[in-house]
Image 1: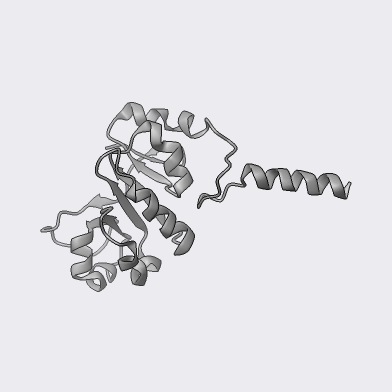
Image 2: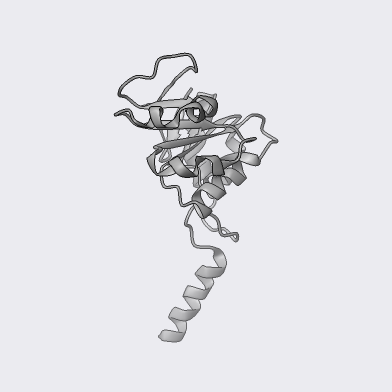
Length: 170
């Protein structure tokens, strides 16, 4: 599955670990929420980077004690019309200040890339190579937004205020 990060297709350094697979001592791994919560200290004690695949029907507050030690939180979009992972992403970025990789996985569709970026996602597992290739174009389609979100962009309103304050200062 192609991974888009920083507007380019990249190799995924994280191996998706099956629930019954042995946990390697090093290397970057992604584990399921069930496996992670069954023994988080054992998973986090290893040398390599650790990430968790978090379903959209679980409370992200369950991750709070571990956020600073997680390299990736992969939020799942099980179907395109289920947007609960958007809320999870905004909570992780805005309320809980998660600064690791926030990955969208599952039904990640090209027409939702901009919304996912605005919610705070910075990596995207897509099913189609063509969607991965189109990502940079789609992501650059809009440069000004009205709503404030976790992606750190200045809103149109705040741009106007900055322009007005510069005009008044001149």
